Image (cartoon, rainbow, N blue to C red; front, top):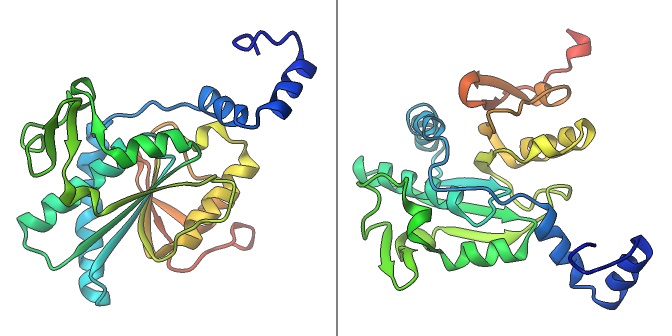
Length: 243
Protein backbone atom coordinates (compact mmCIF):
# COMPACT_ATOMS: atom_id res chain seq x y z
CA UNK A 1 0.00 0.00 0.00
CA UNK A 2 2.86 2.38 0.82
CA UNK A 3 4.54 1.71 -2.53
CA UNK A 4 1.31 2.54 -4.35
CA UNK A 5 0.52 5.56 -2.12
CA UNK A 6 -2.78 4.01 -1.05
CA UNK A 7 -4.28 5.80 1.94
CA UNK A 8 -6.26 2.84 3.26
CA UNK A 9 -7.50 -0.65 2.44
CA UNK A 10 -10.42 0.67 0.40
CA UNK A 11 -7.96 2.53 -1.85
CA UNK A 12 -5.91 -0.62 -2.26
CA UNK A 13 -9.02 -2.69 -3.05
CA UNK A 14 -9.91 -0.19 -5.77
CA UNK A 15 -6.40 -0.56 -7.18
CA UNK A 16 -6.76 -4.36 -7.28
CA UNK A 17 -10.03 -4.05 -9.17
CA UNK A 18 -8.49 -1.66 -11.68
CA UNK A 19 -5.28 -3.67 -12.16
CA UNK A 20 -5.74 -7.42 -11.52
CA UNK A 21 -2.02 -7.94 -12.20
CA UNK A 22 -1.35 -6.19 -8.90
CA UNK A 23 -2.23 -9.47 -7.17
CA UNK A 24 0.88 -11.05 -8.72
CA UNK A 25 2.96 -8.08 -7.58
CA UNK A 26 1.61 -8.56 -4.06
CA UNK A 27 2.49 -12.25 -4.06
CA UNK A 28 6.04 -11.57 -5.21
CA UNK A 29 6.43 -8.90 -2.53
CA UNK A 30 5.21 -10.89 0.47
CA UNK A 31 6.60 -14.33 -0.40
CA UNK A 32 10.20 -15.19 0.45
CA UNK A 33 12.59 -16.16 -2.33
CA UNK A 34 15.80 -16.89 -0.42
CA UNK A 35 17.66 -19.75 -2.09
CA UNK A 36 21.03 -20.77 -3.47
CA UNK A 37 22.73 -23.75 -5.06
CA UNK A 38 23.43 -26.56 -2.56
CA UNK A 39 22.04 -24.49 0.31
CA UNK A 40 22.92 -26.19 3.63
CA UNK A 41 25.70 -28.38 2.26
CA UNK A 42 25.31 -30.91 5.07
CA UNK A 43 21.73 -31.60 3.95
CA UNK A 44 22.86 -32.25 0.39
CA UNK A 45 25.60 -34.52 1.72
CA UNK A 46 22.94 -36.49 3.61
CA UNK A 47 20.80 -36.66 0.45
CA UNK A 48 23.76 -38.01 -1.53
CA UNK A 49 24.87 -40.56 1.05
CA UNK A 50 21.65 -41.58 2.80
CA UNK A 51 18.83 -40.97 0.32
CA UNK A 52 20.09 -41.60 -3.19
CA UNK A 53 21.46 -45.14 -2.56
CA UNK A 54 18.06 -46.29 -1.30
CA UNK A 55 16.26 -44.67 -4.24
CA UNK A 56 18.59 -46.36 -6.70
CA UNK A 57 18.14 -49.76 -5.06
CA UNK A 58 14.33 -49.45 -5.06
CA UNK A 59 14.42 -48.57 -8.75
CA UNK A 60 16.47 -51.67 -9.47
CA UNK A 61 13.99 -53.84 -7.59
CA UNK A 62 10.86 -52.21 -9.05
CA UNK A 63 11.93 -52.35 -12.68
CA UNK A 64 11.17 -48.66 -13.22
CA UNK A 65 14.13 -46.75 -14.59
CA UNK A 66 13.32 -43.10 -13.79
CA UNK A 67 13.87 -41.28 -10.50
CA UNK A 68 11.14 -38.65 -10.01
CA UNK A 69 11.68 -35.67 -7.70
CA UNK A 70 9.53 -32.70 -6.70
CA UNK A 71 11.15 -29.49 -5.41
CA UNK A 72 8.15 -27.76 -3.84
CA UNK A 73 8.44 -24.02 -3.27
CA UNK A 74 11.46 -23.98 -5.57
CA UNK A 75 11.73 -20.18 -5.91
CA UNK A 76 14.16 -19.41 -8.79
CA UNK A 77 15.19 -23.04 -9.31
CA UNK A 78 18.57 -23.42 -7.61
CA UNK A 79 17.43 -26.30 -5.39
CA UNK A 80 15.79 -28.24 -8.22
CA UNK A 81 18.89 -27.91 -10.39
CA UNK A 82 21.16 -28.88 -7.47
CA UNK A 83 19.27 -32.15 -7.00
CA UNK A 84 19.27 -32.89 -10.73
CA UNK A 85 23.02 -32.27 -10.91
CA UNK A 86 23.79 -34.56 -7.98
CA UNK A 87 21.61 -37.31 -9.42
CA UNK A 88 23.24 -36.98 -12.83
CA UNK A 89 26.69 -37.06 -11.23
CA UNK A 90 25.83 -40.28 -9.36
CA UNK A 91 24.27 -41.96 -12.40
CA UNK A 92 27.25 -41.15 -14.60
CA UNK A 93 29.81 -42.12 -11.95
CA UNK A 94 28.25 -45.54 -11.37
CA UNK A 95 26.99 -45.97 -14.97
CA UNK A 96 23.45 -46.62 -13.78
CA UNK A 97 20.68 -47.27 -16.35
CA UNK A 98 18.44 -44.61 -14.84
CA UNK A 99 16.72 -41.45 -16.02
CA UNK A 100 15.87 -38.29 -14.07
CA UNK A 101 12.70 -36.20 -13.83
CA UNK A 102 12.81 -33.21 -11.50
CA UNK A 103 9.77 -30.95 -11.11
CA UNK A 104 10.06 -27.51 -9.55
CA UNK A 105 6.97 -25.62 -8.45
CA UNK A 106 6.42 -22.18 -6.99
CA UNK A 107 3.46 -19.86 -6.51
CA UNK A 108 5.30 -17.09 -8.39
CA UNK A 109 5.29 -17.08 -12.20
CA UNK A 110 8.22 -14.65 -12.18
CA UNK A 111 10.32 -17.08 -10.12
CA UNK A 112 9.41 -19.97 -12.40
CA UNK A 113 10.38 -17.90 -15.45
CA UNK A 114 13.82 -17.25 -13.97
CA UNK A 115 14.17 -20.94 -13.17
CA UNK A 116 13.21 -22.00 -16.71
CA UNK A 117 15.80 -19.68 -18.20
CA UNK A 118 18.45 -21.28 -15.99
CA UNK A 119 20.77 -18.27 -16.08
CA UNK A 120 22.46 -17.16 -12.85
CA UNK A 121 24.92 -14.43 -11.90
CA UNK A 122 28.44 -15.21 -10.75
CA UNK A 123 27.48 -14.41 -7.15
CA UNK A 124 24.73 -17.04 -7.31
CA UNK A 125 27.20 -19.85 -8.04
CA UNK A 126 29.95 -18.84 -5.62
CA UNK A 127 29.26 -21.82 -3.33
CA UNK A 128 29.02 -24.40 -6.11
CA UNK A 129 31.82 -27.00 -5.65
CA UNK A 130 34.60 -26.68 -8.27
CA UNK A 131 34.02 -30.20 -9.63
CA UNK A 132 30.39 -29.22 -10.32
CA UNK A 133 31.03 -25.74 -11.75
CA UNK A 134 32.15 -27.02 -15.15
CA UNK A 135 30.65 -27.15 -18.65
CA UNK A 136 28.89 -30.45 -18.02
CA UNK A 137 26.57 -28.61 -15.64
CA UNK A 138 27.28 -24.85 -15.89
CA UNK A 139 28.23 -23.01 -19.05
CA UNK A 140 29.52 -19.44 -19.03
CA UNK A 141 27.43 -16.77 -20.74
CA UNK A 142 27.26 -12.98 -20.88
CA UNK A 143 25.09 -12.83 -17.75
CA UNK A 144 27.14 -15.29 -15.71
CA UNK A 145 26.38 -19.00 -15.93
CA UNK A 146 23.72 -21.01 -17.71
CA UNK A 147 22.58 -24.47 -16.63
CA UNK A 148 23.66 -26.98 -19.29
CA UNK A 149 21.10 -28.44 -21.67
CA UNK A 150 21.73 -31.96 -20.35
CA UNK A 151 20.41 -30.84 -16.95
CA UNK A 152 17.72 -28.40 -18.11
CA UNK A 153 15.98 -31.02 -20.22
CA UNK A 154 15.45 -33.12 -17.07
CA UNK A 155 13.99 -30.28 -14.98
CA UNK A 156 10.54 -28.75 -15.51
CA UNK A 157 9.06 -25.73 -13.69
CA UNK A 158 5.37 -24.94 -13.25
CA UNK A 159 3.33 -22.52 -11.15
CA UNK A 160 1.56 -24.34 -8.34
CA UNK A 161 -0.07 -23.35 -5.06
CA UNK A 162 0.71 -25.88 -2.32
CA UNK A 163 -2.79 -25.39 -0.95
CA UNK A 164 -4.02 -27.16 -4.10
CA UNK A 165 -3.96 -30.86 -4.87
CA UNK A 166 -0.58 -32.20 -5.93
CA UNK A 167 -0.04 -32.19 -9.71
CA UNK A 168 2.32 -35.19 -9.51
CA UNK A 169 2.18 -38.89 -8.68
CA UNK A 170 4.66 -41.76 -8.43
CA UNK A 171 7.36 -39.56 -6.92
CA UNK A 172 10.45 -40.93 -5.21
CA UNK A 173 11.51 -37.77 -3.40
CA UNK A 174 9.82 -34.54 -2.32
CA UNK A 175 11.96 -31.64 -1.09
CA UNK A 176 10.07 -28.78 0.58
CA UNK A 177 12.43 -26.76 2.74
CA UNK A 178 11.61 -23.61 4.68
CA UNK A 179 8.12 -23.32 3.25
CA UNK A 180 5.82 -25.09 5.73
CA UNK A 181 7.13 -22.94 8.58
CA UNK A 182 4.92 -20.13 7.24
CA UNK A 183 1.70 -22.21 7.37
CA UNK A 184 -0.60 -22.91 10.30
CA UNK A 185 -0.87 -26.48 11.58
CA UNK A 186 -4.10 -27.34 9.77
CA UNK A 187 -2.83 -26.24 6.37
CA UNK A 188 0.55 -27.85 7.04
CA UNK A 189 -1.12 -31.21 7.68
CA UNK A 190 -3.07 -30.91 4.42
CA UNK A 191 0.09 -30.13 2.43
CA UNK A 192 2.00 -33.00 4.03
CA UNK A 193 -0.93 -35.29 3.25
CA UNK A 194 -0.68 -34.24 -0.41
CA UNK A 195 3.04 -35.04 -0.36
CA UNK A 196 2.29 -38.50 1.03
CA UNK A 197 -0.29 -39.18 -1.68
CA UNK A 198 2.25 -38.14 -4.34
CA UNK A 199 5.06 -40.39 -3.13
CA UNK A 200 5.72 -44.00 -4.01
CA UNK A 201 5.95 -46.63 -1.33
CA UNK A 202 8.86 -45.76 1.01
CA UNK A 203 9.26 -42.40 -0.75
CA UNK A 204 11.31 -39.68 0.92
CA UNK A 205 10.25 -36.23 2.19
CA UNK A 206 12.83 -33.61 3.18
CA UNK A 207 11.87 -30.49 5.14
CA UNK A 208 13.82 -27.47 6.38
CA UNK A 209 15.91 -27.74 9.54
CA UNK A 210 13.41 -25.65 11.52
CA UNK A 211 10.41 -27.65 10.31
CA UNK A 212 8.92 -30.96 11.34
CA UNK A 213 6.19 -33.40 10.45
CA UNK A 214 3.72 -33.38 13.32
CA UNK A 215 0.21 -34.48 14.18
CA UNK A 216 -1.49 -36.32 11.29
CA UNK A 217 1.67 -36.19 9.21
CA UNK A 218 3.38 -38.65 11.55
CA UNK A 219 0.74 -41.22 10.64
CA UNK A 220 2.13 -41.11 7.08
CA UNK A 221 5.86 -40.45 7.63
CA UNK A 222 8.60 -41.62 9.98
CA UNK A 223 11.71 -39.58 10.78
CA UNK A 224 14.85 -41.37 9.56
CA UNK A 225 17.58 -38.69 9.61
CA UNK A 226 16.67 -36.22 12.39
CA UNK A 227 19.45 -33.68 11.83
CA UNK A 228 18.55 -33.19 8.16
CA UNK A 229 14.77 -33.58 8.67
CA UNK A 230 14.56 -36.51 6.28
CA UNK A 231 11.35 -38.53 6.50
CA UNK A 232 10.27 -41.80 4.88
CA UNK A 233 6.75 -42.74 3.92
CA UNK A 234 5.49 -45.56 6.12
CA UNK A 235 4.68 -48.89 4.52
CA UNK A 236 1.34 -48.86 6.32
CA UNK A 237 -0.07 -45.56 7.60
CA UNK A 238 -0.89 -45.72 11.31
CA UNK A 239 -3.46 -43.99 13.47
CA UNK A 240 -1.85 -42.95 16.75
CA UNK A 241 -5.13 -42.82 18.65
CA UNK A 242 -5.46 -46.58 18.07
CA UNK A 243 -1.96 -47.49 19.34
